[in-house]
Length: 317
Image 1 (cartoon, rainbow, N blue to C red):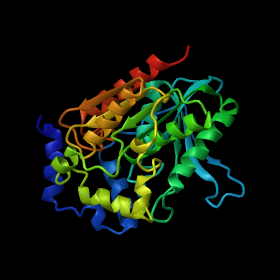
Image 2 (cartoon, rainbow, N blue to C red; image 1 turned 120 degrees about the horizontal axis):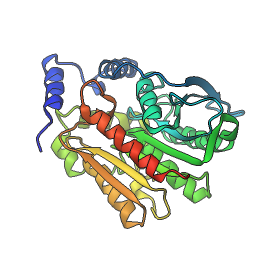
Image 3 (cartoon, rainbow, N blue to C red; image 1 turned 90 degrees about the vertical axis):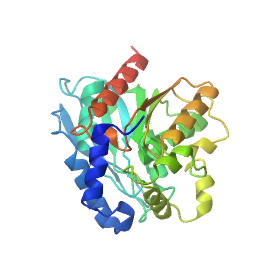
Image 4 (cartoon, rainbow, N blue to C red; image 1 turned 60 degrees about the vertical axis):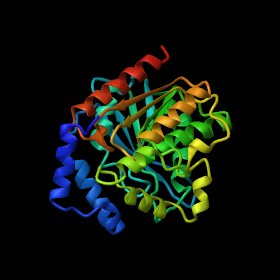
């Protein structure tokens, strides 16, 4: 299927203004450019019951406290015990923060009727692999232990993320299984990168001129990894884990015209082959990043509706 008309308009606009690609910019400039892009195509942030900035304390840890933001959906009281998702943002482990994903997290909380804990994990190149993994793992364990005091249900913790955040979410499920907990009820993986060693067909077909550039992905990896060998670590490429059995149910969302489309599809197939209840949902004609672009794509709201339905279907009553 060809590009959706609005996706074609987006790409034509980027080509027409000859905007520099992210990998052509200094890291700090790329971060500002990423935020501006997220801001430009968002809808007005939805009202929620509360959005509270917190710090996850890590005494005697070199990384210091972890900033996070806890969202409670509109129409809920502070006393309501809610399921909660640990949300891990995208941006190639180099870009993204709480502010750039604030509208998405609000919409996610409201649509799904859950609390969302968005994590501001450390970014590369200042903090290279496995700093982001370590932060996400610490946050998951903290969330499981702190849930009751926050009026959150520790039996209904899910993990989710888009792009690099989807990779981190997949890794957390493997780590939690191997460690015997914390319990994860479901995983949401939105166009994740799960195998950094394989060049999939979609990467060749859509690696240039389709929003996410192959050169940008290589730039992300150059910043994230100190050594090429680290890409072989399953915490970087969760597809390479020795086993995928016993993992939480998964919803894997991909965009057809995305270099990572085949990667996400292959990971979903791997989960199914390992006995995991995994569903793969591909949005035809879409490009990487579409789920947060509510102003541009009706498919963004459609994806959110699918996420909400999946979470409600898996919810423990």
